[in-house]
Image: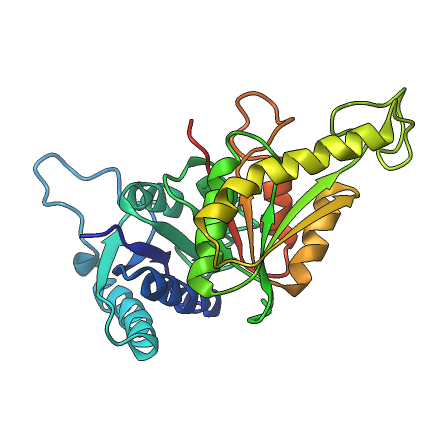
Amino acid sequence: MSDPVIVGVDGSVSSLDAVDVATREAQLRGVPLRVVHAFGHAPGHLPVGAPPWSPADHGLEPMVHGVLARAEERAHAAAPDIEITRSVVAGEPLEVLEIESRAAALAVVGSRGLSGFAGLLLGSTAVQLAAHGHCPLMVVRGRPDPAGAVVLAVDGSEAGQAAVEFAFAEAALRRAPLVALHVWNTWSERAYEGPGDPLTAVVVDAEHLRQAEQDLLADAVAPLEEVFPQVAVERRLVRSRIRPALIDASRSAQLVVTGARGRGGFTGLLLGSVSQALLHHAHCPVTVVRGKE
């Protein structure tokens, strides 16, 4: 059986929106949908020999399965033919979803929640899951343009190549154009003289640096253009501050895809500042794709 798309739900509007998106992703891939609910810690003080803690013993089972039933009904209404399974686990949302992601094609979460998945972004759970999960993570947020492009943040790093591959495949599934966006400035290769603003700092050879960044963009996407000839690709090179440029590009996109950590990141940092900025501020859903360790 193919790995499923998993979605974290708690009954909130945000999580139900995530169910809609996850259902579409499962349908596009032809894989099952797995609805996941976590409801906090199980008690850690059970006496020796006591039966395992169960939500049924604490009056939680009707509530939990009511939440899951609503999610399933919503998914079945959108895609009657997909297979749907449930996973109800006592534990912290990050831990639960990290475990579930080990056998998933994609994890989908909303940007906010009510209980088990409350405060996904504000509480940094989505950031932590993007850094530690074992499959791409899609955070549903903003108001995506259904006719917009898939925007790929190209950084030229080896780890970022996984995001390039994911973005091309996603654009093909959605039958959407792809904007391969590479943002550069005079700090891109630290080719500046002295401190200052990255947009105005004096560089040794600005045209040489621009051409190098253009080549970097071409090298990142050209191999995938051959694999996915059906995807219309726009290579977009922009001289700007990186985070604001990507956030601005998300205004007219249906999805933004980024790597977890690109070139220039601190050694050992699992999620870069660009990825975090998009998770917090993008105007459409964001998928973070981790490269090979």
